[in-house]
Image (tube, rainbow, N blue to C red; front, side):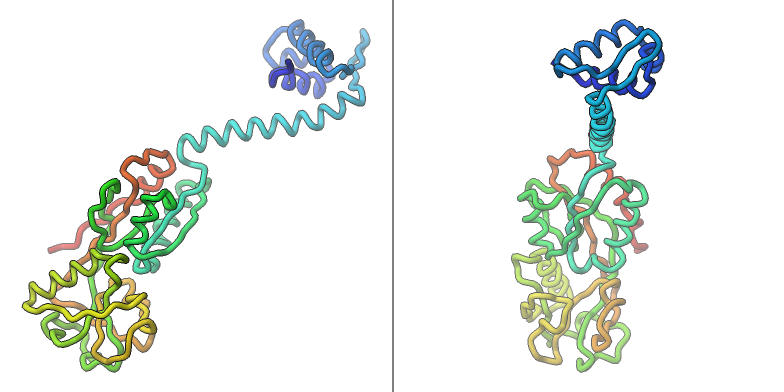
Length: 295
């Protein structure tokens, strides 16, 4: 049965038009090269070369096999090389999900570092709420995710990438729309816009805990997109918490104010704890934690 080595020997002879030069190129004796070519001809049932005492010429079958053989060997060599690259985690596709709050600066900067370090890695990026990101990780529809306020989930590993300072986010019709910074107690009578529990229970728990620490129980209303005020119900008394990057990219009719005392929320990288794929490891290598904010 013809083997890959037979094709390599044939291409060497066909390109050199000399068994001795082909043998030198292959770093082997001429006799096994000649024997391998005869085995290949016997299997194909055709002559690949016209041999004389003075020279070697390709037959029509030989010319056809040379054209196809070179392409085949290039494909095989490419497949072997790609397998080695994939095994090192520097070639392939990584499915990265992120929460809407990470779309500004954080995700683009991180993916840019990944492309610079490993240009062979293609990224399939998507966006979802933190709760959905965790579910998609567990169902193997994502490889890694970036989310705020993630809660411990069995089967998922996580680490803090950075801490974002929180701002208050309100319409310009709000009574505090002229303030540059606000204490949470000033919003005791306002309604806080929150995501549905199944979408980001961690955010909601942090908000309730924070308000209780300031002496009140928050009144909450659920909106499908917390940082898109078009999705909010009517009312000038609506507020929510937003990260600094979301606040910097807020719509013109939205007012943002610093929350005082300062509050920071962690943006975390989350992945399946049993995923030891090399391509994930390359991502985690560039997703290095930023220094924690000074107290």
